[in-house]
Length: 636
Image (cartoon, rainbow, N blue to C red):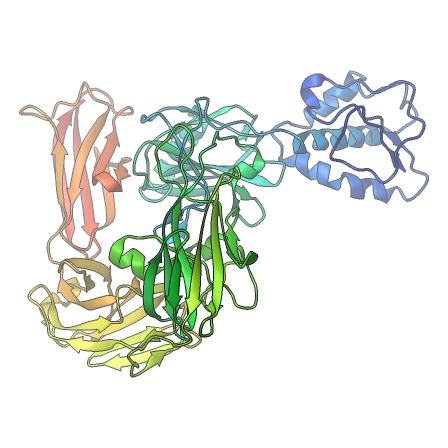
């Protein structure tokens, strides 16, 4: 039987409260028991002692994962701070488990600390509508520079380290006893211990890019410990810290503002534009008009509402994403969404959430206030109509849109729609591609496979063979429309009959963009065919890439004297397919080359190179298999 007494409110609610607490309360060091109050614990093993272990199991797990070792608790026992006189008859194990239980409670109650020690201003909010994905964290400004100290927001243990020229760049993952993982991305470098470990792994694996799971306890950190310096690595567009919180169990991102990160914001969101769209039974657009506040609009039979909005926060001019948008019809909720969490494997459904066609053609980001049939996101609230509005002739509806930020600041606009009862005329297409089925299509010498789940709604069949062009070999093929989003990869297989045998090893599948430029899409050659997978519809064809990448060493003066610099800087460029693999050697041994993809630059660190003359050898191949080499003697 466990009984508890607390001297202040606690989130923990025991089943039985102590009616007669011990005369003397246990004494705990203040630094070890943050946020739990002073608990008196009385343990009786007379009734089902296994219940004690069931109750203590969460705390045991927390302590095992925490940044503080069990030695601290053992030290408390050794110093008789658990109350030797009071518990002299209790087994040592029971006293140890009691300490673990209380320590576990303290870990759960640890308040969050900001990851930066500068004022927090955001350039990106959680759930923001980005290209092909929802933003999964907060982008925190670092005053326009790199090198700001990044600290652990809670105590925990490093669980994953990523080094990449793309995406998150240098990223650190820390698991915490409260069931959350904090993520720090686009870092310049890690702290000394972690950076040394990363270097060891890079040289052991002979690779710059890493994605390392870290054994629990290898790198324990306390709240506030320096874990890294902020940077601009990976796909970052400027110096900042990308900060995330995830549920450790399934890595689902959650809004850090829900867990105590405080950002000053008393500025209301802004509604940029609103569209009334008329839709047919397959959700195809057959008419659209803009809406303004306090106006009345004649509409067809079935309509949906789309809205473009943004939010600004104090201290920054960035246009950030809204947290919640709500649509009401005649004062009653019709459709709304609040973005505080989403699974990573569903993030591309952003293209069903927005009007992708408007984004592709006009760079306008409209959120649909209605649900497409292939949209599986679950942060919406709606009725049987799923946000659609059907009006008979002369029937009216008062509509009100309200946009909220996380702090509850809001802006609203209202307008009226009046039905004509007559749908707008539309041209009947020849054939539809159902979003509920897989499709296998052959046209000319091309075979197209579109998997189930690729579309969010039915799409018009629009596949045809086109004449060739000067930059491609053989015929080109129109594969639907570039303004149609694809959730899954479709597969395109083309014949190599039009390609001379001597060129086939350097042949690639390309997409021809609106400006006539070629975009590499893939290269899988099998016998007399070549195939590629893509999530971008448009015009496709074959091209030959026979030109290797170009490499050049940045230097000043007439010789390669780098005795006063800590890096070699090697520039790379490629005309078409892009970089595939590379290898750097100094004096015949593999040497690290840090690749910055957005700058097409390799940084080759020289801190481990002794003074003297050395030999640099560098190889780089593109995705078509062309190999470039560079060699030089340099002084250090």
